[in-house]
Length: 319
Image (cartoon, rainbow, N blue to C red; front, side, top):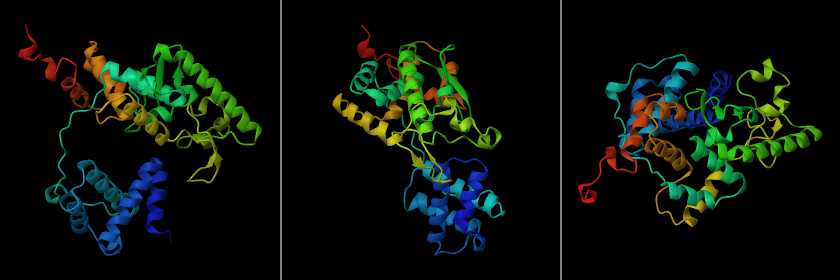
């Protein structure tokens, strides 16, 4: 009989969850069990789940998103792994408060200043975050085939919520991206000569197309500098560049530019939306480019446009 945490991991893989979700769910299940003195979840139920989640909200004062992630993990455990779906918990759950925060946004000059202090792969990746509104994970998971130079668009596959979408490909990056593709091609040819060259394929595509993982179109646009064993299968592959490599470079560039805002890679995505809004693009178009499920999520950018909240000018500035 597999250990419980192994069962959790097997279930997430069977449902094609990301390795991040797999790790997060396994960690929350482990913390839940330890919180209740190592009792098996089959010996527990709604009351123990409520006690754990309320502890997170009241004692640990975790963020609302953290509590929601823990709840999702435990609902998954009981419904999918143990076959014992929990009742609706809302009435007895103390929800962690969700603060209403405005996103940090670069001005156009600040965005240019940060990009000017980057070079190489970090510059190209950050330019896509700002120029196409990509999340960092979406950018680093791009495959060569996701670049559509003829239509001037980028296809984001399996983005947040497991949705595909198209976004704009900046004209000024076309030649840089073509050179990046040639770099990927050369790296891939070296891997093939060395007896490697296979790349991770999503879901069941590896079985359906057994040779696709060696094709150039499926290779990551931003490959890692070295090959490594896949944590799930042990197969040696060249994965995409680590997020931390771009994050650290962008953090250094922000400091070098003298920007004191609490900014990060994700600030480029916020800036993409805000600057499009300032340029007069309609909110629905921006929603589609960002991949937001609800337009109300996109509406937050109306509060940070350069003209001030809701586009209102201060009376002090009116002559």
